[in-house]
Length: 423
Image (tube, rainbow, N blue to C red; front, top):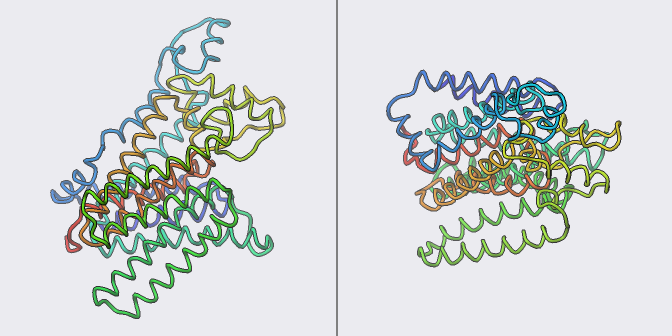
C-alpha cells in the first residue's frame, strides 16, 4: 500500500497547490495520481482489505456508480427529446437523426467524467490506505495543512493584496471551510493523545498547529466570505460539537436522539429563513446578488433543464445560448446550479442522495467509534458544509475541492469501521 499512499498524498497536494497557484494542469496531475493509486491499491489488496472496503461502503457503494453512469449516458445516443429543448428544436428545423449525444460539448463532458472517476478512485484508495491509524493521522495532517494554507492565502490577499498573489476566491473559501473542520479534528486528536499518556510535548505542538490552522480558516470563512458560506461552516462546527457532547456526556440513545432532532430542527429553521429571504428558483436563492438580466438568464436555463441535463461540465457552453450580452459570459453561480443544469434531475438527485447517505453514515460512525471518533466526525462536518456551500457558491466545482472532499470522506468512512491501527 506504500505506493497507493504516496499517490494519494501527491494527488491531494498537487491538485490543491497547483490550482491555487493558477496552473492549468493541476486537475490532470491529480487524476493521474488517483489512477496510479487505484492501480497500486488493487494490485496489493488482500482479503482483509477487501472486506474492510465492503464494510466501509455498505452505506451505498452502488449509488456511487450511478453518477459516472449518468454522465456516460450523456455521451451515448439517446432520444434528443430527453435533453435540452434546443436539441429537439434544432432537429425539427434541420432534420436528421432524433438520436445522439445530449451533451452540449463532448470534450467538456469527457473531462467531467474523468474527474468523477478520479474522485471515486481516491475515495476507494483512501478507505484502503488509511486503515492504519498512523497513515490516517498523516493524511489528516496533510489535508489540514493544505486547506489552512489556502485559507491563509485568502486572508493575506484580502487584508493586504500586495502580500499574496490572487487565488480563486471561491476555491479558497471552500477549502477554508473544509480546513476549519479538519483543524478542529487535529486539535481533538492532540487532546485525545494527551489523555492517553502520549508525549505531552508532541500533543501540545500538534494542538497548537491545529489551533493556528483553525484560526486562519475561521478568519477566512467567517470574516472574509459571504454570510451563507459562514452559515454553512457554522453547521459543520455545530455538528462536531453535537457529536462531542453526545460522546463526552455518554448520553443514552433516547437523549442523543432528542438532542439530534432538536439540532436538526434548528438547522432546518435557519435554512428555511435563508431560502425565504430571496425569491425565484430554489437553486438561486443562496447565491450572491446578481443583475436582473443575469438572474433572468439563469432562470430560463434552469426552466429548460430536462431529466438528463445539457451535459456535465458544459454550463459555460450552454450559457452562451442564454446570455443577453455577447460580451458577458455566464458562469455558474453555484455548484448545485451547475450540477442541475448539466446533469438534470437524475444527476442532481443522485448527488444529493450520495451526500445525505454519506452524512448519515459518518454521523453514526462517529457515535459508534470507540476512539479516534474525530475522523468520521470531521468528515461528516465537511460533507454538511459542502452540501450547504454547494447552493452558495461554485467552489465545489473546482477539481481541488472535489478531490480533497473525496479523500476526506474516504478517511472518515475508513476510520468509522476500523478498530485497530495494526492491521
